[in-house]
Image (cartoon, rainbow, N blue to C red; front, side, top):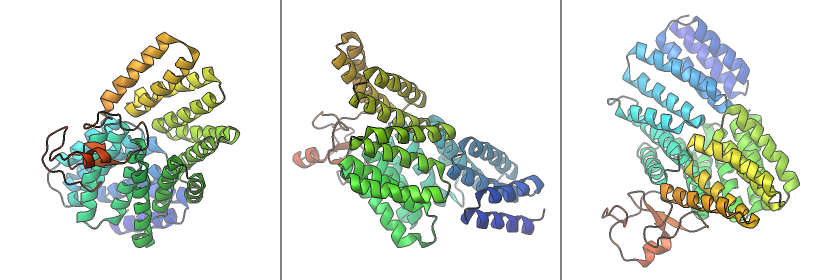
Length: 412
């Protein structure tokens, strides 16, 4: 197959994919891959296959094509192709919750010599690294990476990248319980979609609506949460976006649990768990099991709650997510306290405080924990986080944690 014919077939596949004829697009691209001996053509079609399998939630297949793409890039002996393929390898591992591998591949990207596409992909590398650090509950490093990604977006007028970073920042602040910022950033993402996203995939709108739904639920605005989640789910169903469908089902379940409607929440948790298991989203499975455990606690079925917690704890430790472990120890602590089981209670109290230390989730000014309740936070340029009120009430000129002198707040 010649270069011109290869380009035509890749374009044909893209047109099919954009019109939601995904399986036909995959068939076209696979034929190109089988018949093509041109390395550049193979590299490009492998990139299409990586992206398509990512959006369908077929993460193991995504990883398989990313590995083949790396081999192709090495044959081409081109630094630009190598950077792009390592980024796809990092993203594949991020989706599979292999966060340490993601960080390693991102560092490989950043360590490659200056390339033509480096300026374009540098922000995406920083974003993927930030998501991986967040998956490991390394909050300062996550925030530092997100800020770098945001700088890339601003410096290169890349509104699409900025939209993705804003959604990740929404997730970040939801986890550390600054719900005002957890809503602000996905709202900013939605504005970017409205202002610049005429030619973008609808997934960007769906993504921003989902993160808005999460923030609205945490703020107790359940009607707005349901409205945003329904819009996100509608787009996810239209495009066959299984990962987003699972997240929306989890959000629906959490909304119903917040309303006290456990009968409606349980089947949605089950549906979310089914998809999360199918696609390999282990961190998503932890979040589902945590919600299920809270439902059982509300029903006073404490043994069933402990069973869900045990399953979630195994997954959280496997993935390395310290914040989930902290939440699970906290919930276990309350259950064992109500049961009057002192030995088990003490064990979970100890592990809870160890997790607080490991995640560094406390304000360096007042010493109180961050993430226990909704509170306004502020990050400094060094990416250390403090209560906003503490920074306002203390006339300090350097970061109390690392002593960097500049106190001007960064982008985030």
